[in-house]
Length: 185
Image (cartoon, helix red, strand yellow):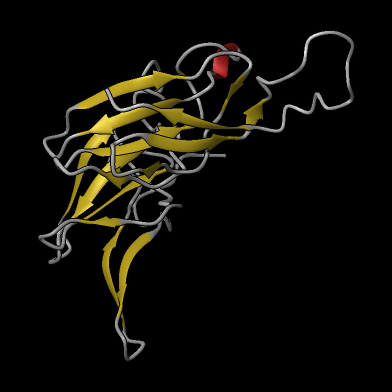
């Protein structure tokens, strides 16, 4: 599969009004702005929208973006596909200080060359910090996160079964996924 070309159908951010009128606010063009925004959006108090694109960005590994109410798009962070992760499918969740948190299903450590995925934090100035790297045995968080009032983050992984009982195989060793919690730091 080749890289998407400018104007090649990389996805849109749109507004749907109560009278069923649709307005395209922004159309992704591939590199360097992003492609395939699978997840929903988060809206701040000023009406700006934040989200992720599964691919493209500066390094073709996915991006975190912002779209203003007037339709101006800015890439806040482009994943390089190494320790910071790659291909974010899930959406973002915001904390009370305006930081955004999300997941990548690949890279970090473990799980062979593709990595097990990460949980990241992005600030509105574009500073990214990887706050968790999944290890072999569980990982691949494709969905977004949920944040509780205390600031703890919860999510799911598509792989792993860290609760396998010791001893002979019970027939329940399915690598079916996990539910995880990351305590506020």
